[in-house]
Length: 312
Image (cartoon, rainbow, N blue to C red; front, side, top):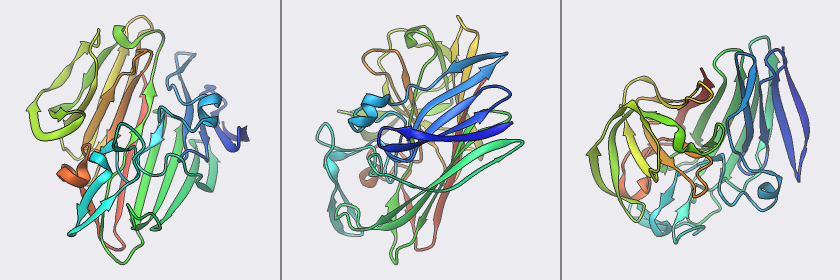
């Protein structure tokens, strides 16, 4: 039922995980942080392409929109790239709008350490070792990312980040996928399992959390999202839903929540409004400074959490 096809996409190796019964597939490259470039899922015999990943030209130019980027060791932004930890100041590389953005592995090639198929799934596991040589983040960690295409309930990503250093350090994680159906996202309805919206000043949270719940579906319309949310921190899963009434298609983007899990969410709509970024995150934007959701790993400790996508 499941197979994995290996090919080349530009200078990177491309791995296509395929369910031959449903024709569902996901494409993952070993470059750009182990990027998910395509995801197609089946409903009632029809295949829907639901992720706008980087195309071949964007891959060649380094993925300038950070499509499907894995956000390790910090999601979204660190203000001016500066932070202080244990009384010492650090400066991260600036890579957009005067801030450090979208972590540090978005341009890295990862090691493929496992591929496997069985009657219920296909999977690929990639590894990135951060050796601590970057002055702005001189901490050593291993990141293990496992992508799965399942017989039931679509696509899953499991992330395990382990402190292999002799000292503690701050860490965060997330994912930056752009979801689509057909046409502009204005016609879609969105349901967000939020508890609070994060107030921002020039896209950096002020620290104020504004009560705002979206437990009922609302039409996106002309809303311009670039908004962070705090989810209900319950053990288990929370899910954001995107519903396309024209296709009678509901995208469910779930994230594991609870202690040291994905308790935050960023939603962003690019100017062309053909897709919407729904980003599970372990912390808020600028968490190295504001400490909102900040995880500190002691030597030998790990962050382990998962998120996924299915359609109904």
